[in-house]
Image (cartoon, rainbow, N blue to C red; front, side):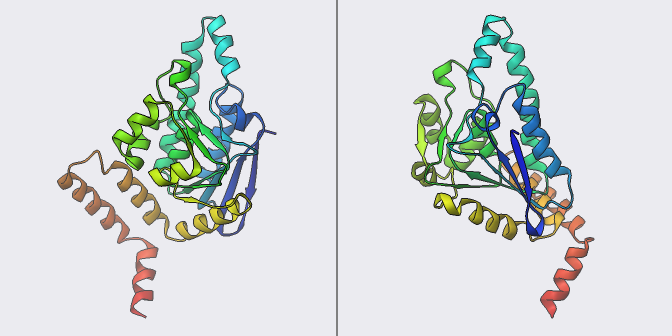
Length: 253
């Protein structure tokens, strides 16, 4: 089995990448299984928060390099890359747009597209063994997996530029200092802390979660006036929800 799914209390689901899903996440064999496991949580209305984690020394180590060599030998590399990004990139968009809170519990190495998977989550908690790497330069590929869009928004453009061009590998503490990880906790407490955050962040109403994620996602794309109109539309819609009515009643009481 390459992906393990475990449901916990309060609508929290753990998706654990194991074996090849962690060490060779982005292959024609593993990636569809990973995407299906994550999508099943995004589509399940009983799942309010999802924790994505890995196994052993890998969170998600990115592409299967042996498969790249086979594709080069078969003159099929562009098609392989297209097939993988056609699965990964829409998945990342769905994660960002969903009302489901997604937590990355980064237990080990997150590299290449695996880095993009971690960065696309709403919050990243790392163990001391977490490592973040791009690794594209060393194999002659340009970045993908949303890494050049997501990382600058977390750590800044110039820090990201150096990260990619110097082919840096960040330790957990370096990633925390830069802002790519939100917290670092001991390995034996990684899932416990991730569940705490998942439970805390997902306690709010569905509209709040979805609208807030959406507004934060698009805020860099809009000018201020456009964004205010966008906020107005969504907060007007919120005024019709049961959560708004009960929230006001609880506040007054």
